[in-house]
Image (cartoon, rainbow, N blue to C red; front, side, top):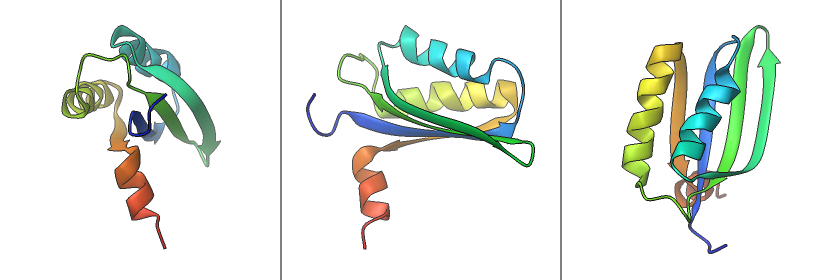
Length: 93
């Protein structure tokens, strides 16, 4: 896998059935592979971070961001999508 083909997706909201399934379906429908996933419930709040590979996807980051933003609105979740380079830059000391 080439550097620069990874995105960081974070999800925050109230826990409910089907969050991971619905987001994973969006990713699978767009040929985006989940490389790593972490989720937990903090004081009733669902939190999830995914690292995904977009090497085989035909959509760009902005389009994926819009699709996931709409899915987040449907499910009352906050979903953010960051390119790995942005994430690394933000956390560089």
